[in-house]
Length: 337
Image (cartoon, rainbow, N blue to C red):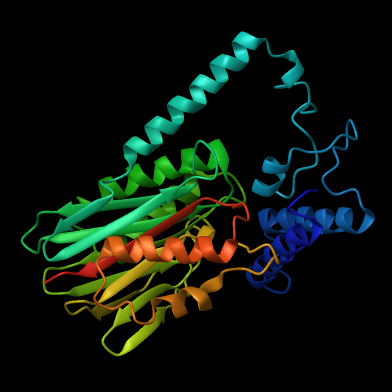
């Protein structure tokens, strides 16, 4: 496996096993979680035996991008139970598939909000970089012209990658575009979205999310669902805003909580998907939350655009050209007035 080796997949699988063990209470017989745990255990055994990444049907190599997206795969594209064998496609059919994928990419980008926005005393900019033609990252900015002049900002990450994850990303987009206009509280919106997502996603699929509501006064209400911590840049320094709630779609009746913060002129909030913090250097070291927090030191007073650009430059210098293995989304919300 060039560039990305067994150590990468072992780390990913051990992390999955740890998350599942945390969810499985002693004696818990939840069939979905037990099945996922068994699949992770089997993949780890395949790593030990040297058969990981090898198709069980034809003994050929499983395509690396697919394996990165889902390390539980055990078959290559040519051996999918007689469905979708690449050798069976004509050149015309492959061309149509490529055209469909390109159209899906254009549709997904059409769902994104303006790349930079200034409204009600706030300045927001983001960068959205899919690993392939489509992405499982979710990003949106919604203005609700209620008496409070609220700005909603959302950033999330659907489990997996590729077309399946992008379909669920568009599902999240439609849900929150509708929920924001109902006038519900932030926790009510997340609870409703969680129930809808739980009912529509297949077993093992979930989405991490951070959602916020910003007011002209500088008050920000923030709610998280298993997403990496936000970075708050304020007059008293840099602080992480942790999220202890489970991702959307894990359980039907998850309860969500919010925290409130007040941003002054020059303060900023950085949100990101794990494609930022899990970017690796050639030494296999991860960029990490600690380095992102260190970058944020001394950045108070920067514009949203400057923050995003400087952070991506720092990430690029760190990686030294090492290829990404995940979708990447980065957002900066600055108090402008």
